[in-house]
Image (cartoon, rainbow, N blue to C red; front, side):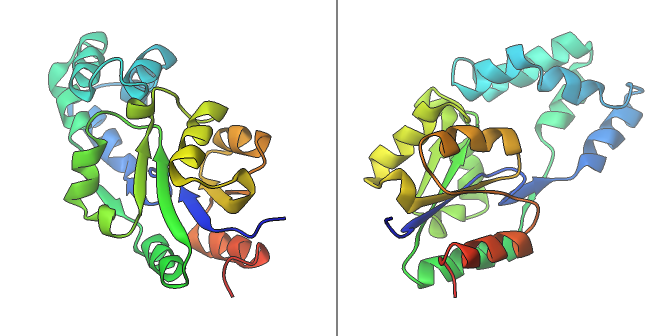
Length: 198
């Protein structure tokens, strides 16, 4: 069995995080029912269009505002801050220092390149693969095959981690070793078990 040469990371919920309390505070400020913004924004009909690049993030936020009946709340939701998981980033740098290639595969929107640049993630990852550019979203096996083809690696050579267990299915289907991310410590243990880290 080939040894692992690359670790592929999900972006949101693994490398960067949004504070759920921010959305709750927007809903309180606009007297909206708790959970109403995410219920609309992440409804399948919106999410599928924006994460496959068929509509822009700008259009997504506008559509959320229309459906919500509150454009101002949607704008606030669309511009909420995020932060990098420094512990995960430290692990990424450790992997790179040991010769392991690192990359991101995200179900993202057309603004991912700018968002990545704003937090200087490009210096930590060889590549960022974005579903809005690929036209396929995880767990579609074609999204994973796109990454493998671009990196010229076999499935067994790429270890994939995602905080959504359902997104792992496509990777598993083509033979990639996977880990359900629940924190940096668990990921480190999984990488050690897979002989990726000492």
